[in-house]
Image 1 (spheres, rainbow, N blue to C red):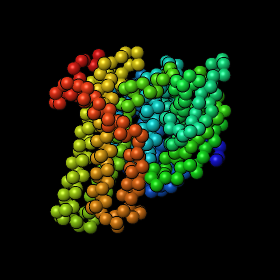
Image 2: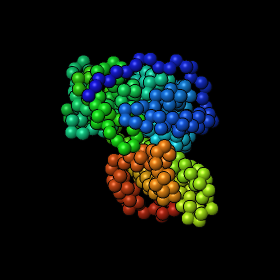
Image 3: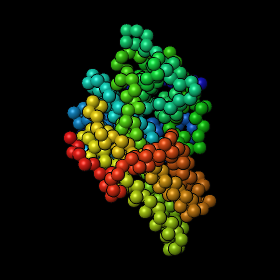
Image 4: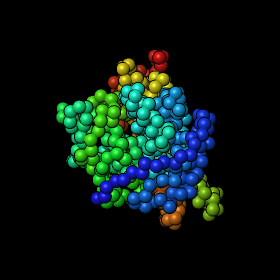
Length: 407
């Protein structure tokens, strides 16, 4: 186990003016570099440093901020949800490890802007916009999970560890949440360059997603001031915010499926096997699966936009359709997992053993996607969609339509 040290320096390149129209272009540039460099960083302990320098230089670290904070509102303004999902898919197509960490950054800034105070929002926005700080959400833990202890005078001390800390040693502002004495879960942001933590790289020995550096980190003894505590106890698990966010990682995963489709097709072209009827049938099924995923992303974005102008709504304004949004998001997560698994299987059948040997990128993409798909509580998410459907008497054709205005 080794101490984590964080550099206080960041690229000083000037952030370019960025519009929604630019996002696809910038995302494609990032994805192209990610794909070209993916094999270089496909080893345990690696992190996509150059990729995140490019993401920062492209203005995409600030893009999740509201426009009045210097961003584009990606992940917080509901009307641009589809643009966000397409960006996440693009980055996932380039490298799922990069997409995983960037999605965590978007998630964290959404939580800050949803539950933070105006002062917190302004300060953390400056971190992302001006200092190119990377944010994340490190919530997974084992038996020795993090607890939060009040010290008086508004200060708190953490005790315990988090697991699957993607970007260990490189993420500057992770959410490190834990229970208070009464069991209520409190969101905390840890300024990593100002504290001493202990990382365990040996904990992360995966078959895939190696470049995420998802180590175990011990936060025992870390002390935080009130500025580091976001929202009220219990806010992290509030719905629909908690479950609606699954559409973000589903978009990254679908990008991995698209990368497999592209690689499979190119492999068959290189071997002059495109006229084989069985290969045509497999590629046809892959194309149908991926297009289905794209339609689901469009549906997810439309659901978010119809629900509220702000992603998953305003915390102080209850919405009676929250359970509907949660169920729809869980359907998106479920179907995208099925799509990815089908695409992987069809790819393997199409290219055979030779196509699955390094340095062919399909071998790495399948490893990464297989691991990334194993998100928690899959069965509960699927059951939630069924529970909602059973609780409604609405006809199937209108089960997921919003009848009330978004305001």
